[in-house]
Amino acid sequence: MLRPSMLLALGALAATAVACAPASDSTTGTGADADKADASAPATSCAKDQLALKTPGKLTVGTDKPAYEPWFKDDDPSNGKGFESAVVYAIAKELGFQSGEVAWSTVKFDSAFAPGAKQFDFDLNQVSVTPDRAKVVDFSDGYYTVKQAVVALAGSKTAAATDLAALKTAKIGVQVGTTSLQAVKDVIQPSAEPNVYNEQIDVVNALKNKQVDAVVVDLPTAFYVTAAQVENSKLVGQFGAASGTPEVFGAVFEKGSPLVRCVNEAIGKLSGSGELAKIEQEWLGSAAGAPELK
Image 1 (tube, rainbow, N blue to C red):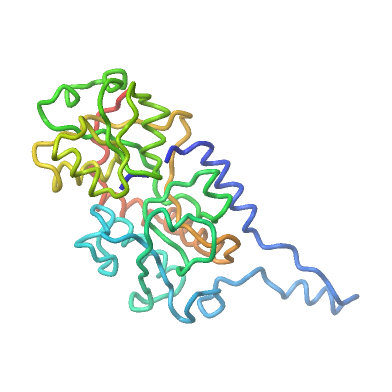
Image 2: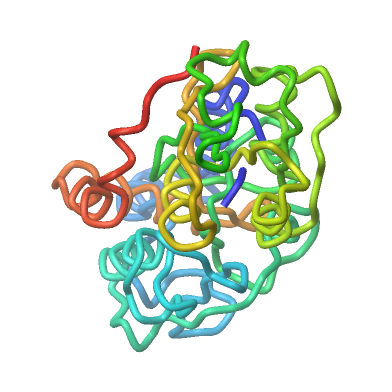
């Protein structure tokens, strides 16, 4: 799916980590007893039975519907297939949950990072970490580094573009509230305002119906658009954020959630063991072959 430009992502991630670090314990006792209490009182535990969950014993994960490939498979997040579904179950396993203890909640994309209480423990839905979003929700460390991509109908003038300059006169379709929209404005800087749509399927249909010359989506989604959604379409190329800072997807949490640290630990273990890279290669491996637009 299409997701807004990642300005200062690493700074946002660092700020999130600081914001979610456990505060120092205050000591109410004195002397040896107080020292003993301090030594034996760990930071907030990540043991399964001590996690702060929306439903005790269940890990509730949010995502949008339809749940598109390659992030999910067959519009069924619970089957463990597709990149984000596989990542969720890998995180859940690290936290001590069996697959049957993961519950899924349907959450619209832009609702996930809106202010306020959440119905999920965390949400995975190709949400890019941005400073503005991090003001009202918390993010995990990044689980995927993403670039934006341009898709056009094969044989069109836009499909022949080899650099960003060739896209400036194109009519571009993009989803509202996404990093893709911000990337169009910041990086491509087209001469005409892009056509903005509420849903990804509306963006795809605009290309099918030749209402736009091209669409901008995240790179793995672009492969799915060309393979399964729009016949005779072509992946023109990929490009990065205007700042040069990598754009990353992060799990989304209600602001102040104590679960952030535990999920970060899980992501760290999956990254360190190579498991996260294996999942990426299985479900997103084709993304490496797209030409770079500069």
